[in-house]
Length: 412
Ligand SMILES: *Cc1c(COP(=O)(O)O)cnc(C)c1O
Image 1 (cartoon, rainbow, N blue to C red):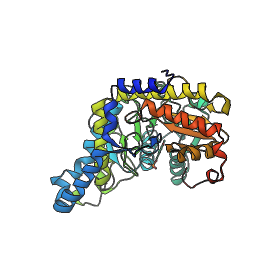
Image 2: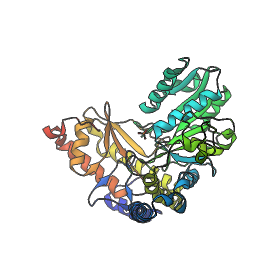
Image 3: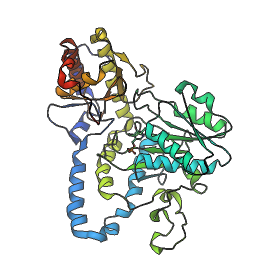
Image 4: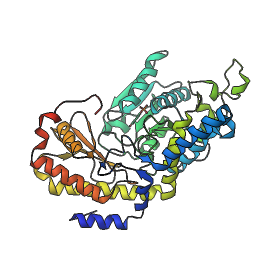
């Protein structure tokens, strides 16, 4: 994707086959929002539906809502919709808990499926919570497992006869590097290990085929490219071929085969329902639903095509217009990238603060990464142009040196 002027970008926006998608979101006037990889924007319909559920379902129906409004079935009906975005079937995805808690469940399930093996393998680029959850499990019972964390390029060679599971995040949260899931899943299977995928930066941005590649388990995050809102519930994928064999450790009452019998012996539910432990967070699930339906309507392939065009254009403009300012790319230049571009710069923190003061919203990740997320449903080509223009001005005038941009904050 190339564009030599802002007018070129305006033309690209006019020709964009999913340009109407942006109108489905509420976006503050004048803001260039390039942080949908951290917290997705608000679908207008989400606000309306939550208001209705609060007012009518909770307000009027009260406890009858569990059946009358299908509250008890929502984790599964929304799971079936997410399944369409990630190459899974109905009954293989359920919306429950949070990403970290679901990581705990799938890794523990994999440990039980490979009882003679002791290694849980991941890479140094994985998101810390995934690694922490595995470490917690390895230390908690029996203390026979170890979590092995290797360099990304050493990963495949590190899978061996002791590897119970390889657990990875497909798209690196810092750099945006994208793993070939089919290749790594096949490499794990060739050694008898299971392959577990965290789709936090994949779901809603990059189409994948979990069943075609025979992934064993996956988890994903609701509040990034799925636009489910702050603290949105997450999801679990467990393929039908594992349903009869698998057990997960958080054996709460709603994962029981007959929760309303209130018996005192746990017996897992059939199918995907076993992955539920507690009462579903209805308001959170309702808030997620509209954004996911919109992704299905506009098409995840079109979202991906536009995202590659946006990130490609951004990289091209950075290269041509900011060559003198000490940036380097942490994101691969080829198509093995997700929907974000990460730039390295030794003054990354104050540079991002100066951009935010100009209403260009990205974020910063230690030690030196300035991250820009390009959520294709609502980011325009002119936004890419304008963001680069702001960044050029911040660098040319050394605006980032101002004292108010230096102090580190708690949330980066
Ligand atoms: C964002 C993210 C999470 C978030 O976990 P929560 O439990 O929802 O806070 C987990 N894993 C990865 C890879 C992420 O990018």
